[in-house]
Image 1: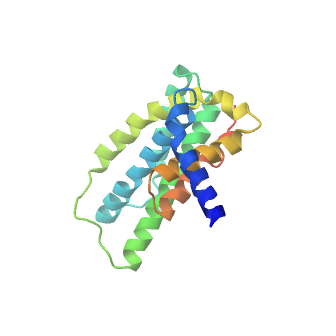
Image 2: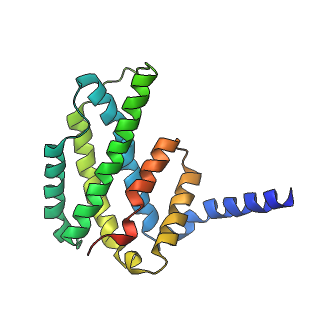
Length: 185
């Protein structure tokens, strides 16, 4: 019982310590932007369910990557870093889409009737692009830190304790940030 109490207090301390360090640590801001981008995947999946469009859209992915490359230099982010990071973000987003579409089909469950407009969702993704690039620029020193992965793991755990998510979305977050410390320069 005492161990459970100590563990509970440790987790609570970890969860509550986040906002105090947010100003000095840009990682929570980046994780929040990554999570906002991933949250859009639910609506994209719904749109693709309604329209029958495939999850994989190589043309759109190339457009995103070209846009990212153009914007990266202006924000002080190496092109290779930005391109790899955004490729990973799109992978994580597709992971959610495939997972949701599979669940909806297997369970013969149709999600709520709101029919998202894919062009509006893409506009929101484009808006988040700037925040993500700014986050990449601000976290560049962290990626050189020998404790980078431990710091990312701790920040992601803190985020997940503060924001409820199902296992699919948690897995997508892990994918979205799993190679963060190994991005090319």
